[in-house]
Image (cartoon, rainbow, N blue to C red; front, side, top):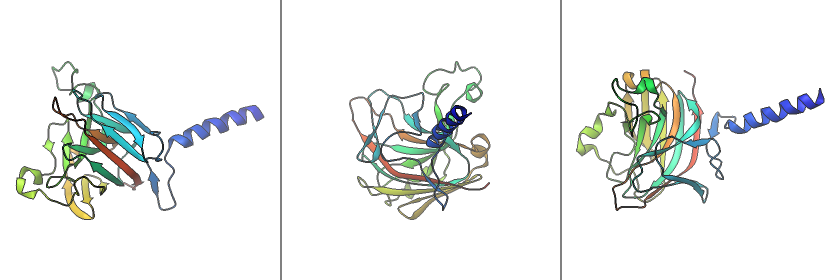
Length: 233
């Protein structure tokens, strides 16, 4: 009996280590500052993810498609905060409620292969790029929609709230079909999109290293202080 209880204790310890611990106020750290525990690279892409100086550091690899480091856990309604610093020549983003494509996500007649095939990480993405730009607006990564936020269809909405080459704080509030974002305290997106919510009511958080043009790079992006607070539906 004692041996069995010890085995159970060990199993529960492993489970608890895999689940981010929530503080009294409900916030849970998604990155421990020392390892990539709790994160797994999605099937497509070869970009490099390492831990450097207390950050998750992503580095481009030439000829690689967009690459994503995905949280092991899925989230539905939540508040997410993180800090990010991106190279001025690199486009990036953070996926929310996203997942790898299955056969059910592939268009009829497709062989399910290639960059848009089975395994491709897809869903809503919070855009990250230098200023002036569209950082904070919502893009439908590898979906039929393109931009989910309507504002980027007008180049005049480019803003300068993202500090190029510096650390920036992003806040995301996802509640039902409504997604709101802030960049360094400035409200950016306030999107309600019923269609994407029907296909992506919950999913993983994903850190993107975008593909680059041949003969360019390497470029990098880094994240730190990533935390999440789950909300009641």
